Amino acid sequence: MFSFIQKQDTTHLSIPANPDDGTRRAFLGHSGLLLSGAAVALLAGRDALAKGGQSGASDARILNTALGAELEAIAAYQLGAESGLLQKPALDLALAFQGHHKEHADVLAKTIVKLGGQPVAAKEKYTFPVDTLKSQADVLRFAAMLERGAVSAYLGAVPVFGNRELAKAAASILGDEAMHWAILRNALGETPVPSAFMS
Amino acid sequence: MKKSGAAILVAGAVHALLANAAPAAALAHGDPVRGEAVYARCLACHAFAYDRTGPRHCGLFGRRAGSVQGFAYSDAMRRSNLVWDARTLDRFLANPLKTVPGTAMGYAGIADRQERADLIAYLKQVNDSAACRGQRRPPSAASSPPPPPASP
Image 1: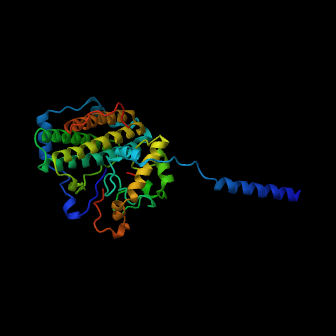
Image 2: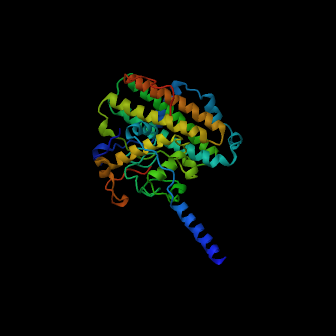
Image 3: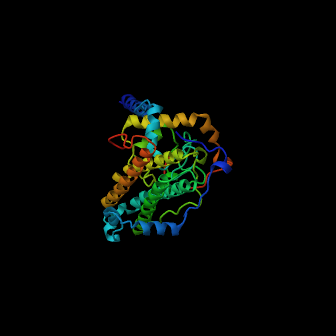
């Protein structure tokens, strides 16, 4: 279901769009994260991306929509982390997943540029249904809803890329977000993988 | 000869009129309960009450595509001349990129006719709810529009 925002002042929470670049760098540095094979392909040179030919503009549009959703997810996890509602180990989980979304956003933005597009910027403010977030379980359920939607969004994007390398990279991100969803469901005491197929 | 020629013309015109007036393929009957589950696929980008990566879904029925004030639509959507109803939604959801080439909603679509009908039934049910009707105001009259952020 969904929740309506009743009062602007109390239920729209504004958080910085770029929470903390320093924190981000620290996270990436400490975690020693390595780019996956698909991400490396995504960051391939312009020539490789140009194989998509005239589909480049369309691919850039698709990536930009994905980037917009990734930036929102980063802000959502920031909201959760700063809410005071998450305790360890859930807090660590949220920060780790936020780090993944930051990596996705970084790769997507760079690829959009390589395709000749202009990456969307993070919004100054995001709207979240904060009036429904009263407990750790509420925050985790909200995150799970976003991750589940992200899986479907990437699943719907994979077949429409002109460049198959981009489709592969999107599928890589899809896999990561499906894992987030499953782990969040598990943390909520729900069946982690409720079905054999996603749609 | 003249009479028969005129008769043929009239018959042709009547046939054309009937063809134009004939209803398109009937939409499937949708189940909003099943449609709510289908809507989970939309939740990376959409909400009912406020704009996200995609525009809000409250006030969707009867709304001209690309008309939510403050939302950054693609040029293609703004110029689509679509007005959202069950039929246009069915067409768009089946293949967004074919229906509105250049849309920011880079999504392959929902191939299953029944799933589309279920989703549209759910969208309609929520749009008809008191909570959604309370959200529906002329864009210019909205007292607290969410910040601008792909996309019926």
